[in-house]
Image (tube, rainbow, N blue to C red):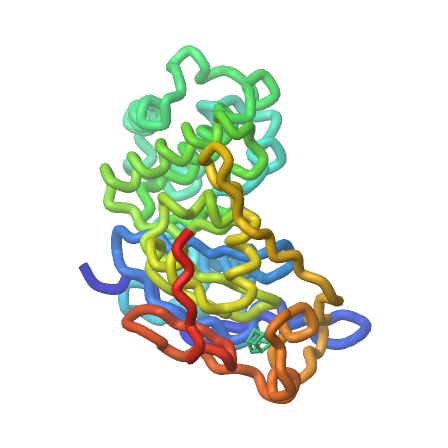
Length: 323
Ligand code: SF4
């Protein structure tokens, strides 16, 4: 299939009165066409900033972004408009990301008008709106409804429909189900998988909840304070997770089996500051396995088995934890 997206040493630093905040600090990965990369980490780890960098909503401080083999890091205005057709984003809170003054139909139509799809032919655009509404499970009689008249699940379906309007190849899904009831989450996840299978889409799926990306991802990447600390095939992370932070994340997932319990790893200690971070592993103040060299040198991302990368000085002690 080949790589659709290649990220090389991507960085985003924000200026603050106390110094530079390292939101994304040297991320590298490759994502093949038709695949899904789940990006997991707690609030403030830089996962949403990473998504916004990739779709060019914000400018990187350093590094390169290659899309379909082409360096698209520094795009001209025209090239940026073209790339927006291929790369779209679905946001966490459908209510705040939708224009309350636009109906469902107008919301889906707007990007087509901006990009002059179908040569501006209005009847073809209207036909396309109906097709997309059908594809995301929005009934035709909702076309003239406003976001506030719909429930959260339907509002997120509008967000997905709008992202699909320009027939993109790649979508960054930023916590697309976190604001929804659990019963609706499964419906939206299934819908997104069906759409991916039908259209051969490539996803980056950002979430704080590992259990959400368990089924939808091919690979999972775990981020901590701007760094990637572990990346491996999705099935593997639930069996052979090596990084102490990944183990803590996994321990928080409830087991859906009567009477079954998993020992919860409670992280203690202060979270390091992402502003002008100190040398060493950024997880060290909270790590139960930290040793002296952890606060002196930052661990590199090492491949410990095919496709499984870990950034931890203990990487050679990889444990097999059947869950
Ligand atoms: Fe813990 Fe050290 Fe590994 Fe960091 S490098 S996760 S502090 S053991």
